[in-house]
Image 1 (tube, rainbow, N blue to C red):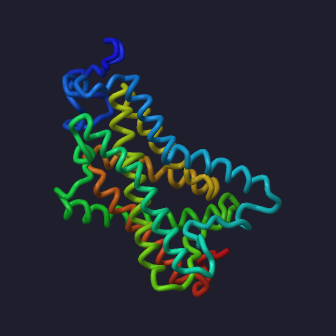
Image 2: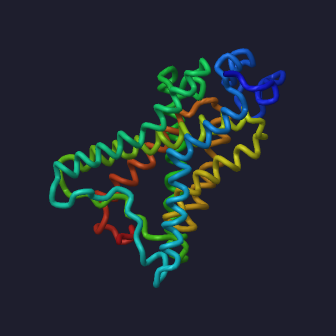
Length: 284
């Protein structure tokens, strides 16, 4: 049922602020789908509560626990991919696959919500229309951010602002590397679709300025990495700013997903292969 005229999404000439041209539903389309401002606000809050917004709260609680524990942050560890059933590899694999697949449910929800307004994931550039473009720029972005991010992490840990990040602590079984790669892909899809494409689209439809939306997106990205320490918060906020600016330039989350996936694959698999074998890589 339609709300009163005050709650309807009014699209000004040239589109909505903070939303890429061509990615905003027209006024008639939005009204036909029942996308009032109140609907959009509630929808956005529910999507975040079911996904990375909840992760941000969890991360804050985890950081408070680490910061108030005796000893420095660098003496504590944050494990990203750990075993769920030590000594029982098949049960462990089942839990790993369960965690990866269920973490993608918010992405399916976002796809459904965007289809409801007649757009779909193509509206945020998550499709197969330009695979070469996505992979080329994603690889270049991963190379630029990956090395910088590693140096920043090492510096933050040495300064005592970060926990020791353990990218993986899985048993040495046949499915270890495939699960790490799948986990990296899941992280990339979930974060870039929700925190960049969907969030910016909805905030633009709610009338947020481009700068306010950029701050919100980068702050959200930093918040759910706070469990790693202050370095994780600041480093990921900076990455969020870069990703939002590039998304607005390209109109696609595809390159961002590719970059994020490559960064995490190198981190997860690289740690699995190098941990304990090189002196510069911190281990728990």
